[in-house]
Image (cartoon, rainbow, N blue to C red; front, side):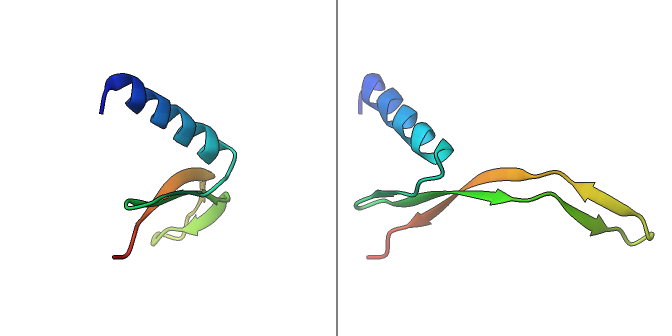
Length: 64
């Protein structure tokens, strides 16, 4: 793969994931953007910690 192709692929992947779309690549798998809302997490000492929202990418390999 040449650098121009890699940059173009990364650009398209980033754009589609920011739009919350699932991307499927034949022979590789799929990429999906996941959003976790803000939540409260109890600590063992009794404190409650506010966890910030987070976005991440889930990759699922294609089954053969």
